[in-house]
Length: 299
Ligand SMILES: [Zn+2]
Image (tube, rainbow, N blue to C red; front, top):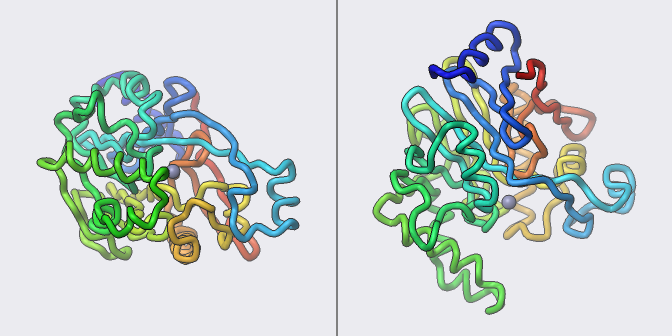
């Protein structure tokens, strides 16, 4: 923590509850206690209303009037006092350039936490069939591992759509000597690493896991793909995604986690929330509202 960025963060800590430093449009860093959490943006796009399950014409008219909703794809870098932790690896598109902007080389990543094994989350894990993060230990929920390595699960998918299984299996295989399987649980689950708990958020995939960070008295829940369409799923968390493996279960997880973070004032970060990707959730009517962290102190 000796560089300009850290000094700026320290100043920001003193001045503001919302702490940030911006290196460019692809990385923004906030302090969560002694942890520095940076969004690593893989880019913005828009999702189509026909990806949504349970969105009535009235809901779409109100929250996605042109039939689309804003979306992004992100990974996150968490720098603790003694470890560099990558949470998901995006597509691997801007990932390595973004890490460089944060003065972190791929071989300086000590830990990779995977929320789930879709291609937009593990795309950066391999380089030419080898570990892109050669010194990293890989943490994956047992349930997620079991799904992607299950022949039964794979055989239920049409043959021409099994690429995701092959990609997940290759990552698991290449990192097998560094693989740590853990059981995700409720808010009291024991820590995987100091300051990191794996919270079960099953449904989008069978082992989909959110990571709760805590440092000093601050917390942040990096909730992976708990939402894809914030503009629709905040007011209507009952709306699911056509590519949820179990949409009904995804709705149950989303509602339970939203209720908990709103009640306990735990800020969140998401892999498909547009930059800065992190913010606060509060109850609003029958649903919820999201307020992005303030970019109050531009460098
Ligand atoms: Zn995703």
